[in-house]
Amino acid sequence: MNSSPIFFCLPSFSGGGAERVMVLLMRLLADEAKIKCIVLQEKGSLRRSMPPQCEIINLNRRSGKIAILAMARAFRTERPETIISTMAYFNFAVMLGLFIARHKPRKIILREANIPSSTLRSTSFGWIYRFLYQWLYKYADCIICNSSQVKNELVALNVNSESIKIISNPVDVVSIRQQSQEKIELPSFENPKLPLLVSIGRLTKQKGFDRLVSWFDPVTMPSNLLIIGDGPEKDTLEVLCKKKGLKGRVSFLGYQKNPFPFIANARALLIASHWEGLPSIGLEALALGVKVIATSTSGGLTDLHGKVPANILIIAENEQAFIEEMKKISQKPDQTSSKHLCCLPERFHLDQVVSEYRSAFGLARAPK
Image (cartoon, rainbow, N blue to C red; front, side):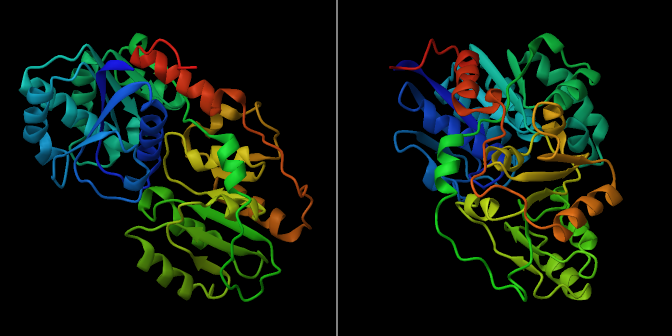
């Protein structure tokens, strides 16, 4: 086992895509490297998925901004040699904590999980974030992006392209396909025989569930829509469904530890995001051989253009195109095979992605 711990830094153990990737990496590397995890708050659905041998350093702070000094104290005490952080705002806090602690790890890895333009739009102090990208990211030994779009935006912000490495989100194809066989009970729809469409994610503005519900016309689209996930937009979305007369046609299921049987039972997975880095749920649907319909603002899924069958991944260029694709599925008989084939390219498979992360961490090779 590698004697020097790898420090993973993340805001929480919520079920978001960035956190899922980090927790999966910790689980897979825990047998060959010491793992420590610095977290703002030790709560969230992924907490129970953490490897038991991992030491968790809980800063007990509400946000990265107010946790900078607590991080600095932790870094001054722990003196990490290898550190990885994910998500831009949290990366900024980690880097500032290292500066205050006056500690320079042997290797600093920053992972950019979303497109930088979304980070800049999320604050009224965009110029400060631009400065932080240019100033703080130059001290990283490696910046990991999950898609070419994320890389291109970082380069446009004058981040050194030589330090950037594209590593896809890891997808455990074997496990996902096994989990998809679990027996489930679908929610009660007014007409359960209608085609099922599924959309999964945190119920936040980013994920675009508001426009997805608005696009879902009960007259021209004879299908049912299942939305899986929790979040602050839930009450607003339920009111919107009521106004549009979608009762009995749209169902909210809440967070599911295993969403894959629901995807496997659907005609298509819908991704209506306003922005993304690379939505893992889209990759997981492709691993199950289920059609994905995504907005053109759904990030790195566009990197798969030409690498998967054209009829299995649809990138809708605008609102009307998205609606038309939903209509096609709703109005045509199910022509899919009862046994879906994996449509995900090898470079997204677990072994390949973990091997690339192992190399970034400086771990020689996986134990036999």
